[in-house]
Length: 332
Image (cartoon, rainbow, N blue to C red; front, side, top):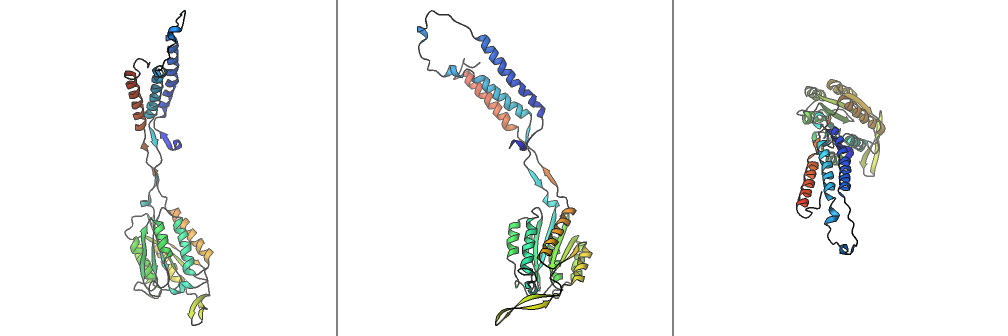
């Protein structure tokens, strides 16, 4: 607790030397005031003393010493330094645009591309607690699954709930990117980022991918594109009358378009061919963005001298009341 308290005027602590000096003077004075009395018999003094007042004769110096201690602490101006805050309004806004088309069920990733992408993206989200992050999903069309939020628990729950079939099948890369940019266009963050993950080529939607990239550029949105899928063929589950059968399907990542999107917006294109590679890509993006933005930190000191001043006042008031009422004549 006290390690988080600072003092604006620590020089006043030299006044603490007054406390032992005051006590020493009090003891010396008490000894000087003591007298002696010689009597021939003590029978007259044998009556028991039931009053507690004589035992409290030193209470005055105790109260005054404690009051002086509290007053010195108040003069030193203790300040609380607990309120460190992150300036999240000056941080990064990120929208993850994830392909959920049928081809994302291919199992060249474990358990499949869609689930692998979700799990790794969720880890990425948890590692960036100070950023606002949103989620856009697209297939044959696109929509916002979660707007920009700092409440990452809600975002993670919504991310975990996405699945293939939520929208008509297809791969509307341009629509997915445009929807993500629309979520970022009014942001006042220093850095606005889209992470676009897809395993195919644009074959749906009314907005071409490169047009969406130009729109992103106009709004200073940087796009990191990720092509997901092994090279060559990938096992894809097909439902038949005999149950699920696997069929090798060609991997059709439009690397040319994804590279151009990244280049136009000042981002970077990555290719993920397995779980570990995808995880590494998210780690690289994490480091790239941390290098671009220094999140401002500051702390707001809170004055804490008033309670000590009040304690000193109460102690002196208690001593004054006792000295003039219950312990009148006993306190010195």
